[in-house]
Amino acid sequence: MPRQCADRCHAMQRSAPTLASAAWLLAASIAFWALLAWMAFDMGHPLVQLTMPGGPDWHADNIAAIFAMWAVMMAAMMLPSALPMILTFVRLNVQQGEPGRARLFVVAYLLVWSAFSGAATALQWALQRADWVDPMIVSTSPALSASLLLIAGAYQFSPLKRVCLSHCRTPVGFLLGEWRPGRAGAFAMGLRHGGLCTGCCWALMALLFVGGVMNIAWIAALSVAVAIEKMAPRGERVAAVLGMLLLAGGAWKLVAMLGGAAA
Image (tube, rainbow, N blue to C red; front, side):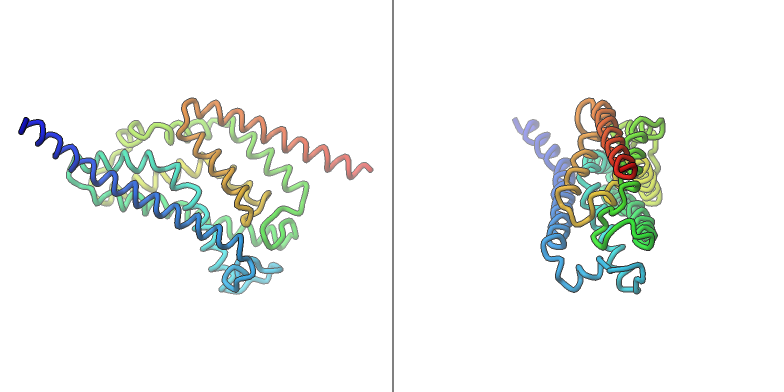
């Protein structure tokens, strides 16, 4: 009996860091989603207004606010689907007596999505300059909407998508294959996983320019799609079905645009 109690205590001690990490990640995700919801429902607030300039003549405060909005949105959308990978990394490091490495892994992962946010900010400015999106980043161009849907749909069937998705769906396989020692190694692994995750999801994230970043339902739908692809059984088949739906949606938009032009 004492031996069993000791084993149970050791098991609880090993699982405590994993449970704490899960709680922190979930709390962070909820906070990011709450911030997005506040922005969507209080668009008259001065800070939110900074993210919706009426034209392409952005000031420094607009750039900072829009970048921050994209960074928060990417963290809110991508952290939940990265939870299995991060928690597996935590468990492996706890077994090796280095639980602190997980923080560097998460920081590096979010840093990659921050870089994506910078690119999205620049693209938003270019699209707004071309008058293809409105201040809430909703597409005003049927050609843009059709193109993004068709690109996202086709990308679902690309070899790069399949490779990136397979790594995201197998945390243990990725971590064992990409394992690097030390704190610098944890940071490098986080960058690597962030890069694979971006390679998997960038085209779906580009669809935010179709439905807008103030549309919580649209953001949530894309987040759920990403999570199902990564975590659900046979998620790769779900990705294929999603690809067909996106191609159909893009084709419908294209036919409607051409029909309107002919009329």
